[in-house]
Length: 52
Image (cartoon, rainbow, N blue to C red):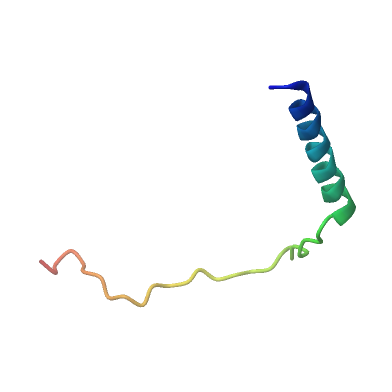
């Protein structure tokens, strides 16, 4: 690649990096600790040992 293309690519990468830093960090939802969640039971009727 020519020197001009390399410089343009470096400039674009730097602009993208600065744009990402300027945007800031999006806030994540807070985790709830100690919350009990019961396992979901399947409502499907499945065959047993004697259903053949």
